[in-house]
Image 1 (cartoon, rainbow, N blue to C red):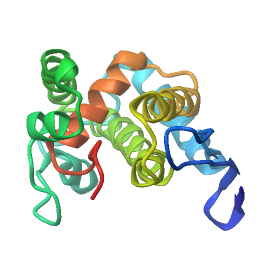
Image 2: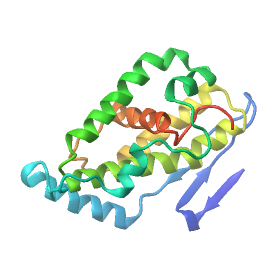
Image 3: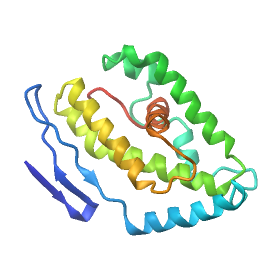
Length: 190
């Protein structure tokens, strides 16, 4: 099955279904404007590690990801991992989620860093929603789902480019757990 959603900046193949199905992740291409924005943000961060001051307030978009969503699935991270057969990830996931939260809080006085976090969280959320969730809904096994999650992490890391805040794959995985803990994503069928 070939999926071309150029209006959504999505191209690639996506096969999902039972355990015998092949799963390939759809690649979301970062828009030129996102890359340009990140370059400007990185330049500001390089000056003093902080960039523009936030005035003590978080951006509205970042607050969206920091707050638990009250729409839909309100289970916590632990329940979502248990319900999806990922009990083996509980300890590490809780630790990485906490590390992601602390990383965001470390930059609470930087409007510039907050924007970078917002871009990263938004990208992870969109990629997960558009590539991993359909594979989960299609009944793919954990190996196929994890393959898609790995591709999401790699693509987000590529999108970040120079990556002045030095997000590595484990930091991005922690952000996925953070999104899961705040009711934005899940690892089991709806």
